Image (cartoon, rainbow over all chains, first blue to last red; front, side):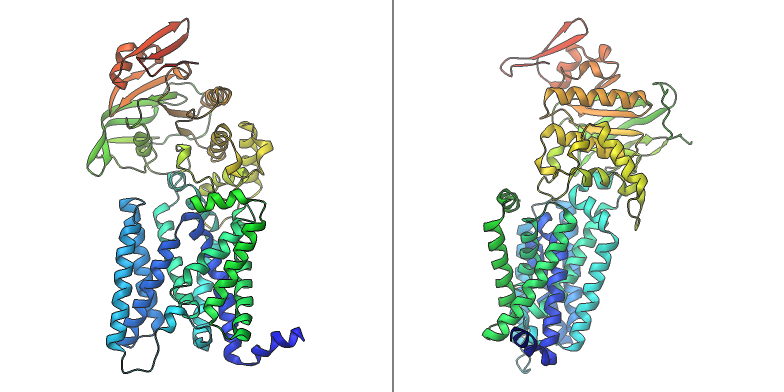
Length: 281
Length: 272
């Protein structure tokens, strides 16, 4: 009976694709989200998603594949933010805020001016639509996600050292600046891979919430990463079925499940002190 | 010129200098922090870099590890221009580290091995042996499974010293190791630094705290944007030079081989 309920939606190809995409995104976002949570990159992730949207609009108007537009915009923005951070120091959130909301506003206006004649609804990228994932999109998500996971796997120890103690890591001869830019580039790629399914507005929740939940459950970096990936995948899975049977938007439901898991763990966690550390930053 | 990096247990503070700073001027954003600094450190020396906060101690260390370039003059380490390398262990001030990070004592010490391992290689048996040895050396072996956030200030300093040792450096740069640390740990850290230098390593230690460390150093550099003195402590620790460096009125009291510095008037007494 339960098995039937679980299997029913999977008879449709587009639903199965949507589920696969959601779970993949849940995993990738939480893996890169481990760095986002620990380094305080949530706002940057949010900015990248908004800038990617403008890239999508521009690509659409110019007749490119939308991923290309999103990728170019997000990676350029990520590198730009990284360079600003290195030069000016840490108080860059105002500059990022001005820049990203400006670029996002440009995208919105451009869309309404340029795409009147088309039936295409680019607004689905704002809130995300998991059911619009085509076979080609799934391949792109798989490719981009695989690239992100591969690079994090290969540079695991270097990225850990640089994230924890950037000054000592650089003094020891690790290329600190390059590794930090790489991290921002991987964040940009992750955001682009996720934007279609969960939407510009909710990407940041997928980046932050499962990883933050994992942080409350362990004090080892690699466990936080693995646990976060598991929680991200679980949120996607549960959220997918809930959205199917309750007939509500998938992106929102997935994020709600992730938020509920966080609330549950935060209330029950014996490591309440961890929460305070996390929130204070 | 090739300088041997092998550690010689019997090394003494003679021979070719390990660090040469020659008419160094540098700073940040066109604002000079250090001006016309010149000194040379022999192998095996334990050098105190003494000066007020903001006097350029950390800046000097950043130049020696190669994170900051000289504007004028030059800095040679082992005969070559300073550049980042696992051969120099830099222990920054610990308040710069994020204590909420989910890593254990063992994880932190192991990081000392990462730069030597190079890309794509995972730590092996020898790396674990060195990490164990380093933890033994700072007497933190029993704490290896503890999260870094659960340690006291003194224990944190020991862990970072262990990470530096695991790195197998010939030079150690230690920024403010005794600030916020209890007296027994201060004592322990300096005992260990003395041993390390006797084994042929060279150590530079920054401190703004005078009295506790005065006797420990083989050489002292007085630094407040400019250099106010460099040499053995008995020659450099004079009331005149110290007052020039700190730009205050300090009273220097000597009891045998102990020096007590009295800061005047309302700062109270600092002694140990």
